[in-house]
Amino acid sequence: MPYHPASHRHSTLLALATLLCSFPALAAQKDAQQEGVRLLGAIGWTHDDNLLRVADDEPPFEGRRSDTYRTLEAGVVVNETIGRQRLAATARLSKVAFDHFDQLDYDGRDLQASWLWEVGSRFEGRAETLYIETLAPYTDFDSDERNLRQQRRQVVDASWKMHPSWKLRVGAARDKYTYELLAQRYNNRTEKAVEAELLYRPRSGSSVGLVARRIKGTYPYRRPSASGVLTDDFTQHELKARIDWLASGTTTVQALAGYARREQPSYGEGSTSGINGRITAIVKPAGKISYSAALWREFAPIESPSVSYTLNKGASLQATWLASDKIRVDASAAYEKRDYTARTVFAGSDDLTDAIRSASLRALWQVRSRVQVVAGYAYQARAGSPVLGTGKFDANMVQLSANLLF
Picture (cartoon, helix red, strand yellow):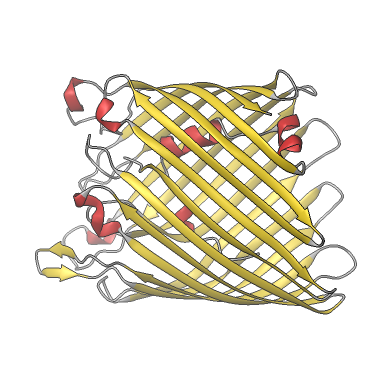
């Protein structure tokens, strides 16, 4: 499994909106994996009572916090198997229109392609590329201006089956993020990662691997400060164990955790290290309800005008109820504490923390084999930090969407 940077995770209700209307699911998900070319379309309605994540003690933009927006989406899904090679691609175009804050209206793009390859009986791997253009979150950015974020990603991965139970894998990934607003350009960055893994998989079906990884982050624009200009460039080295343990017939424990050392010269002492990773437990009993829980301690970028990354410690719970052959209900809750590293020591710099709480509930109804209706609710709250100058807020969102795959 190749490197997936923490930068793919964003604590924002706009990201939860995407989760709530994710498509396809249930029967449509099976159809999407069929060979050939499929067309998809979607229409959605969302109401958010604190769209721009304005703190409780701050005046709202244009005298209001809430807004409603509509989403139209069209795309194509391609799945082709040629011999032992598999090609998969998805292209989606979306148009998002807001009722009040219409300066945020935008056209989104989501283009993804992957090639899963095999050569003989011992060599396999994949190559992937991705381009996403969407509205960046406002969780840590105080503005009512449109701020589109472009994400580009390329991945290559190759494995050698040295023995029926042993595999050697190498991989590389490149992620690039750029932002529309001049005030956010300091968060433009490129992250390059290389890794190697030795994996052991016995006949039991469980597996354990040792992963060595190096991540290099480059920020082209230097962030201004009272002492001059500072760089957010970093280098991170990791040595982690990857575990996939079939604990029982219904329980699986997955983990990618170990030691990480992050060197970022412009921050505090210039380096920090310690335990880093994520552990997930998945329980799928014979009934209609399944569960999962996760714990993590990870470095993650933050889209803030003054800070580039945080050290996050969090936990989450998820549950899925298959109410019938056509109805599924998903629920989730998460808590994440974010620790910031001060560039210089000042009064209160030993307590630079805040917390994000989130929860969501959605119901998916497979009306027909090609038609799906989704209804959902999501909640997000930030504790805020007086030292950082960020305030407390909460936000609620409701959503309804209809999806078509044909």
